[in-house]
Image (cartoon, rainbow, N blue to C red; front, side):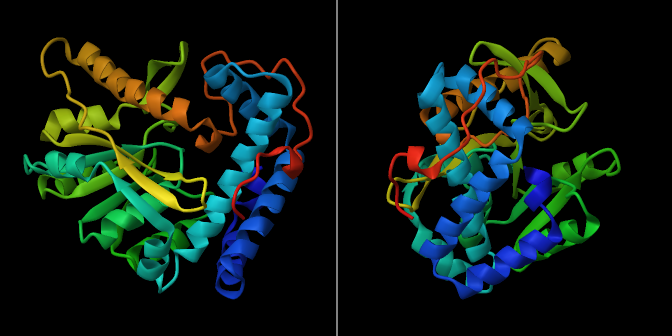
Amino acid sequence: MRDSLYTIGGFKLAFILARLLPRSVNRRLAGRIGLAAYARSPEAQSALHSNLHLVTGQNGETLDALCAKNVVNFSRMLADYFICAGSDAAKEAAALLRHDNGEQHLTAARAPGKGVIVVTGHLGHWELGGLMLALLGLPLTVVTLEEPSSELTRWREACRRQLGIKTITVGPTYPFAFVEMMQTLRRNELIAMLVDRPYEGSGACVELFGHKTEFSTAPALLAHHTGASILPAFVVLDEDGGYSTMAEPPIPMETEGDPHQTLLSNTQRIATVFEGIIRRYPDQWFNYVPIWKGQQASETTPAVPDESRIAPSPP
C-alpha cells in the first residue's frame, strides 16, 4: 500500500492537487484513492485487521468498518498535509486546528530548561503537530527515518525547512544522529519523534494491549543523558473535520538502578501512556504492517473495503 503511493511523483502530484482543488474535494478524492490502494494490498489488509483486532477485540463487519474508516482517515490526513506544506502554511494550519488541550503540560516540560523530547506515534496528524509547534515560535527539530528515495528525503526536508523545522535523519548510515539530538536538547530546544515503530535494532520490547511489541528506546536514552523532559503529544482528527492538539503530562523517568532495566522500564512507561491514547483513537492509529511479536496473519479474511461501510463524517 505504501509502496504504490509513497514516491516523489505521488507527493508532487498531491501537492499540485492541494493547490488546485478545494479541501473537500481533495479529501474525498484521497479517501477513495486510499481505499483503492488498500484493496490491492492483501498484506496491508491482513496487518491492519490483526493490529486493530488486538486493540479493540472487534471482529467481523464491525472490524471491517473500523479498518475502512482508518484508511480513509489516513488518506484524508495526507491530503491535509499537502494543503499545509505550501507557502500559506500558517493560514492553512490555523484554519484546521480547532482546539488546544494540554498547553500547560508543554509549559511544564520546558520549565527545567533542559530541552523537550516530544514523543508521538503513527496516530493522528503528526506532521501537523510539528507545524503547530513551529508556528508557536518554538525551536523544533523532527527526527525521521530516511525516505524510500534520496529525492523524496530532500523534498520533505525542504518542506519542513521553509516552515522553520529542522530535520535529523536516523538509521544505520547516520552514526552521529544521536549526538545531534543531544546537542539540540542541550540548547533547550524541542525534538519530536515517532516512537511506536522503531527501525531495526533501535527498540526495546514492551507490552501493549497485553501483547509484545517494540518501542524506540531513544527518548529514554536521551532523557538519561540530558535530563530533557519527555512530553507525549498528538494531533487527532475531530468529527467535524478539524483537528485537536493534545498533550499529556511529562512522563517521569526512573533514574536509579541497573541501567538496562531502567531503560526498559522507562520505555514501558512511554508505551503505557500510548496505550491509553490508541484505545481512544483506534481509527487513527495507522499501522499497515505487523507490529506484534510473533504476530500471525489475520485469521479471518478482511472484507473488501467500501466507503459506504464507514460511519458518516465530514468530507
